[in-house]
Image (tube, rainbow, N blue to C red):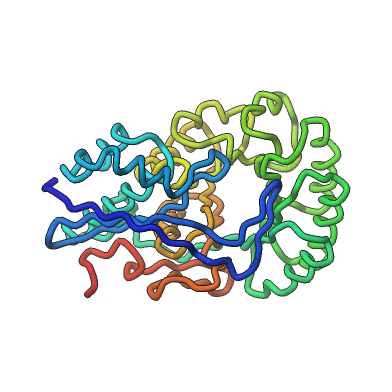
Amino acid sequence: MSKLQLTIASETLRLAEPFRISGHVFDTSPIIVVTLDDGTHTGRGEASGVFFLQEDVPGMIAAIESVRPAIEAGPTREALRSILPPGGARNALDCALWELEAARSGKPVWQLAGLDRPPRPLRTTFTLGADTPERMAEKARGYTQAKSIKIKLTGDLDLDIARVRAIRAARPDAWLGVDGNQGFQRDQLDALVTVLEEAGIALLEQPLARGHEAELEGFVSAVPLAGDESVLSLDDVAQAKGRFDVINIKLDKCGGLTEGLLMAAEARRLGLGVMVGTMVGSSLATAPGFILGQVCDLVDLDGPTFLAEDRARHVVYADGALWAGEEVWGAPAQAT
């Protein structure tokens, strides 16, 4: 690749309302936007980083600046995997390289990614932040377009059970999954899974803290288990087998669409299910995940729905599904 001009900008996305998960409440989502320009074509990538690894905007900017000469020399996406470790900084650069390649080649990103057909709308989950059971049930009823809902739990077993039961009563029609966000202990899981099974919950995501994955070996769960924080990048996929049934790939965790596609392929080889998720970000961060979602079993790409305001060119949510057009990201030529 030819010499590139690298630009890094920081932004703060405002959430429409506070969002609560186990141990955290979010009001804003600080992000970076990277642009790579070769003088004719540009590529963009957005990242918010991995908050549970204390990755933040200043750190991502510093990481990119530390390798600026190597980036402006125009590396391939595969070479980028050796220049920076997995994380938000590499994700932003990787996504910018994908879009730049699409613009230069005249081929949309989905073709460059090796998909055998154009993208299709994807049924996605819509997430309920942790709150009182009554408020969560009310919000679930208000998600009239949602066909799939993910429930954030906190590790307070009695309260979480009440949340699950209230939401199931409010939405008997919906696919429901729950996300423990590392909030539970191993000795709580038998009781939790019993209730989840009774409520028809289809997925239990990351019940234990990262580093405690081995405690899941030999645990028989009637509800499939998904690894999120426990599965950051390609190096973690092999260890997921025997502990999880599904891996949740997030581009900020793994360092971009390039690694995400490799993780999906390896998970399939090992007999694991594949899910794509996202941090809270704009449509620019969501669109690359939409490409990965084309080869996934489960899609959790509702990040922009939490924002007070999205980008002018944005993804579309309709009838419980997500659509990310090329005008949002990844077009064969840059719009003017």
